[in-house]
Length: 425
Ligand code: ZN
Image 1 (cartoon, rainbow, N blue to C red):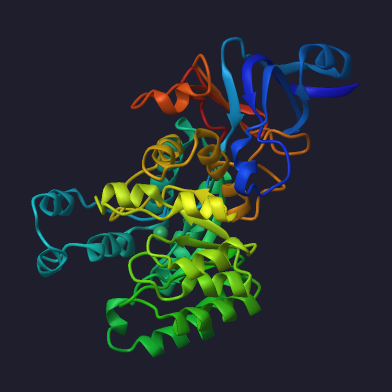
Image 2: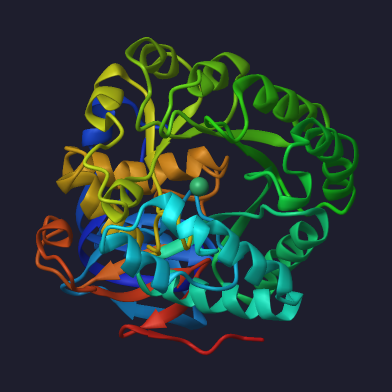
């Protein structure tokens, strides 16, 4: 008998996503669905997934255990959002409206709008303000089923440290797990305009070692794009980061293909992200590699690009495809992974089960957490969504509603009846 301090009784269905991780090709179509499933956890980890008879035989429910009635509900693993820019201040509604009315990027920049608005607000924000903003956003994410989130910093050294400290503080106070990524090479700060080489040297010689010394980030990411960082520059920064002990990600082939995903595949980067403009030849090398392709359908949707990453071809070629929000104030003000799952189906041409695998187990792989979360399997964190729908297909069929009734994070019920439980701190 195994002891349990958290139990979900009798779910209509449980999409366990159990099996080899990450998922590729045809394996992405199998959500490993169990009918009438019982789940049990102890100390935050799953100790049982199976039917009622096996549960009654194998599990002893500890006194005081949390017991959730899963009758009529569909269970799935908590979503893993593998790409966000969580710690920013300010917002850009005014610019958004003007852009919809036809203003060009240059016109907006001339009016002092664009990324510099939120850069200035973030620089002016205190660590406490950034922490409060992160906590608010994590609440919204949790309500739509995200239980693990990657979060990128990305400004000058002092702001960078404040952002990463805010993430650490938020992680300590919020049930959602945060995977922190250092992204100093996101833009060239105004004070380094025309002196990009000096900025790169500063990043490599001063900032990376300082972030490492303080243990503030696990990954390093670079925006490799025309007019931002070239492939040569990205390689220089990411190889230094890798030598310093960071795991590596790259924003690649978003607008102009510069060879970022090909480099990522060859260098063993954990992920290449965006890929809207990935060339065919690079698609094949990415598919043959261990590097995850993190696709962000919210960006194409939000910017009305009329063009998406070639998700269907990436899956068919055998790439590890993950889906994420790219939550940020300029190109994807989207925090819901439930909606990203739906976008994966409606706008990227993925099947319901494929897009789900991309939003859970493959998302976990893209942040190196696939041994820990992303599926409902014994030994993994008990991160479970319980949804009030007649069948899992309804989760993609019914748009614009949130059917997530309860969320269990690491064996604790953190959303009950659609409401956040009070935080412990
Ligand atoms: Zn991004």
